[in-house]
Length: 464
Ligand code: ADQ
Image (cartoon, rainbow, N blue to C red; front, top):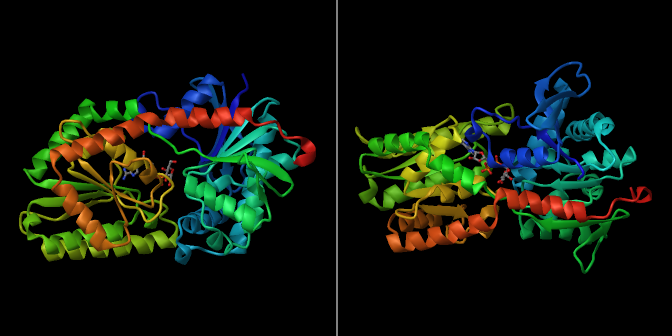
């Protein structure tokens, strides 16, 4: 069987001591790499003036290969084009998008460096699977070097509408880069539609009846492959002793009050400010919640070197402080705002102690926290998930209360409804979400993508 080569910005090293510390995605990739004696290739996380060749190390049954970045690479490719241009634009946040030629050049340079560093280590029959927006241009460089491998790409974040993509001067270069792959995977049908729309209406491409897309002299396949959860693993974590301890600790501190919970990286796409404003309206409209309800928001900071994140952090702290000042009493604070991450085991316990899960991003590729909240619930007394319609997860989790996160009044109504929902309705909703989680686990997602990639015909070099 052919080897699997996974390429992503960061690699995840298996942790034998604490499997629960790894996300489901990492665990699923490790299993596939092990099965295929594969290689996981990515950035080491180190920045150095003179990065050498790739460093290799063998872990349980597969190989990890990493390269360092230079300080310019780090600024232009990682903090620049990936996190200040592509990330905001692909999440419909044009106001946060940086347009900077230096970033463009840095991105394509580093993508080429990835390709050159890995090329000597790829075998003839390897399947190559590239992940996410950091490395869109990787395959094109491999093709330039003569690669005729089957190469697939999965985009973990949304694909933007054409009008937004067109604001990037490098839009055509990017999409041409995507056509160097054999198979493209998106989180949802809506993302796939946005991509097709660009290809057909902006790039003069053709959508064939069987779904293949033709443009830039190549014909490729593209499909929706929504990512799933390692359901058994997460359920086991949520039932672990540590989760139980965290749940009891939380319940003791709640002392009979109800709790809504949010767990997000501190990111402007996650809709935290709107969530807080909606919670404020809830307290203003329904005084019965005073002293009887709290919002626990866990939000570890991320991307602190990107200026937009600093501004957003200050804005959120301001809103949170104002709301707490307005409503708090000597023995009750409405929002507990926590800027640190918790191990996934603990999160499972906290999710179980919550009556409502608030997952209200303004835009999100999938959002695994939504699936994790649903998975952690028990049939006896399930909590209610309030979920943004703009998260990919909303297309699958039809048992959630689906909301428009931009409108605080809508969000307030949804919270009130969730807090007062009958046990019968909560159980029905839980059953429907449970079925959706079972239908599509992270292993199903991975296997479907790899099988589809294996099925694509090998690229003829004259095409490349
Ligand atoms: P992310 O934007 O990182 O991922 P998400 O899918 O919500 O977002 O979370 C990934 C993991 O991080 C989850 O397993 C979650 O438990 C953990 N996590 C998030 N916040 C945490 C916190 N405060 N403390 C501890 N752990 C936390 C990108 C896309 C998503 C897509 C994933 C996978 O942006 O839309 O779902 O990739 O494809």
